[in-house]
Image: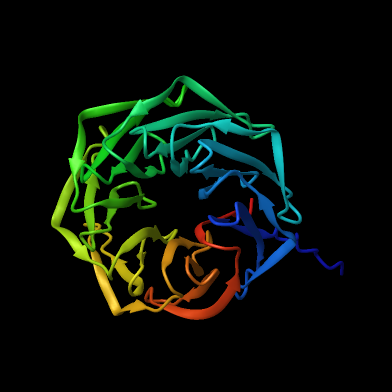
Length: 343
């Protein structure tokens, strides 16, 4: 009897922006333990003050916003090693102080917030090279000091948090061109200083992290228009100084990095989208937790620790609570983290 060979599972990788070093760290993820092992080499050069990092939906390309260079760095991923190779050209212009990045689910378009310009830059992705081409026009207006951006799973709608306006800008996406068009009305209110926005995997609910409000505002998405309606209750408390939110692939759990307290953990009501604090409600991280990300299989959570130069690793329990699974060293000033998924 001939043994049946089992196809090898492609490795998964993680990438972390190091704001002070002007680098991005690269890691191979252990699918069983969640541990991260630095690649060789372990870091790759970016522009000045790298902020956000994003991986395209095919896990072939990485994009990094360079806040002090007004550019976006572009890389291709070696599928076996995770090593990054700059594209040709290696960068594309953005607006002033580019920060958050979102890639649409089709892998056709990229959106980046420009905090000093009050705009979102829009790009088309070349499917072969990963190089970005600015759309025409190249940007669309947001509210004041845009900070976070998210695209819903259907690729029909985009949302941008505006820190100075305490609002979310809402857009429809032209599926052929990638162009963003403001909805009517164009914004919805949040609480104080919204830093980040996320959409759940079903595309029914959206969440805004309010840095000075120490809350998450919760919304229901109109499936036809993309317009957000406040849930009841409209907000749930977080730890101190919340900065980032991630939702697990099943849509059952949400995690918020809280700079003063670690990571806040929630269960999500499947019918209403309401976040319910787990028990315990928080788990500690390193000093100054920044970005939180859930690994695509839904087994692990990663949090960058800005003042510890590390990433905290957690396993997800059946009830959505987290168990510490160690840390890994980064460069100086880690901010954002993004992960690939097996294809």
